[in-house]
Image 1 (tube, one colour):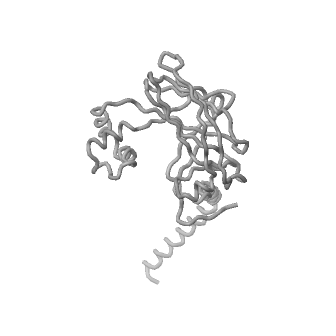
Image 2: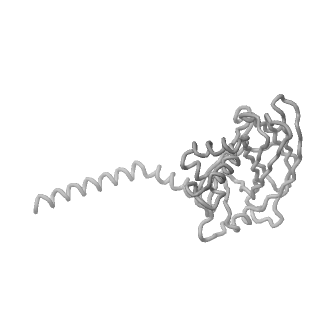
Image 3: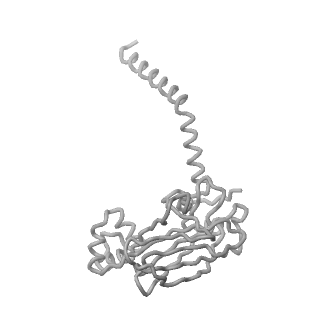
Length: 256
């Protein structure tokens, strides 16, 4: 028996021992991780992104304060529904009240916007971006967008759920601001962004950032939305949830 053979045998036995010990020690952790990963992808979507959303209330509004005076505010909202309503053909109807205040606190405007969300299964079947919660009983229905402009600079906005279809368990929102920029400022702003941020800004363009014209870069920067967080204390004044976003996998399976 050669020395090299004995060396390889010793190394193999040592590695086998490490694997056995590691499996005993880390097996439960690994199993838990795999279970959580499966839970995160049970809707046949690969996770691309995740966002913080805030649950709207009907008894009092959520307030979002702008980082500086702005002329337009945007809300991305979707209804959350029970699993037994995931294939509801008529979808879900709800309405939201948006109140705008100026930088001096004066009331600028108030709107009540009626919205309609498609059922979760319908959204998933279209192959569009699929949004879902992790380890929660409700499912996210189709997303709606609210864009509200004001005649004077906006200092803060309030968002309240007015009413909703009985099948709607909750309505969640993300609020964004768009800072006013001149074309010359916008181009400089685009160039100051990281490569990843430039790619995100270029998603609505047919070409990647290195092939965009100066005018296209400026337009992308001008239309850049920045997320806002609600005023107050988490858990007391607002409820924050993690909303996962993914793309549909190649084959659709219906899960019960």
